Amino acid sequence: MDGRLRGDFDAALRAVFNRDTLERWLDYTMDVRLDDVTPPNVALPITVHKLIEWAESSGRLDELIGKAGKANPDHPLMKAFIAAWQEAAARPQPAPARPAPAPAPAAVVDAGALRRAMAGAFSVDELEQLCAEVEDELRKQGIDEPLSLDIVGASGGLQNKILALVKYLDRRGRLPALVVVVRRLRAGVI
Image (cartoon, rainbow, N blue to C red; front, top):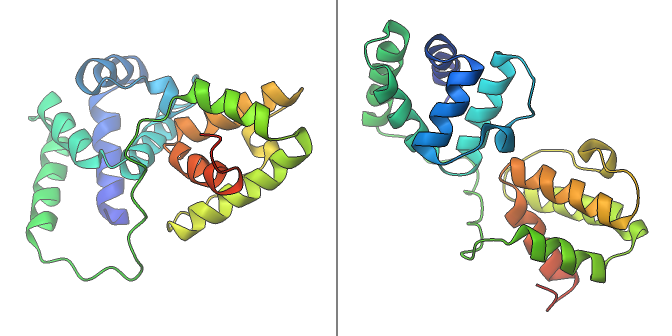
C-alpha cells in the first residue's frame, strides 16, 4: 500500500475507533490482541500506525481493511478510503523493484519451545550476535529494521533476554526470521 493510502487508512481507523473500541473489535473480529501488536498505553495515532505495519508484515492487510470497512461503512473517511483502495486494487500494478520477502516457515512457531531451545543453545554473549544475524535476515526479506538487545529492552540473565527478544519479534510478526536464523546457526535445535 502506498503512503497516501496508508495515511488515508490510518485517518479512517482513528475516526472510527478509539483505543478501547479498537482493542475489542480487533480481538472479536480478527482474534488478535492489540497489546501483542503494539505497546499498551500509547497514543491512538501510534497504535493505529503499528497496527497497519503489523497487518502489512503479517500478510493480513486485506483482512484488516475488509473488516474495518464493514465495521463502519457509512463513515465518510472509511467510505472514501475503501473506494480509493478498491480503485488502486483495480489498476495494474508495476513489477516490484525488489524480490518479495521470503515466505514464513509453514509451521506455527511455539514461542515457549523456541525460548527453551534457545536457552540451551546460546550463551548470553551470543545473543547480541544472534540479533545481528536476525537483522541481516530481515534485511534479506526487504525489512530494514534495527535489532539489538537494547532495542528489545532485554535485561537480566539469559532467560529474561531470550524472553524479551522472542516477545519483541513476535509482536512485530518477525518471529519466523528468528526461527530461520536459529535453525541456520544451531541446526536441529528447533
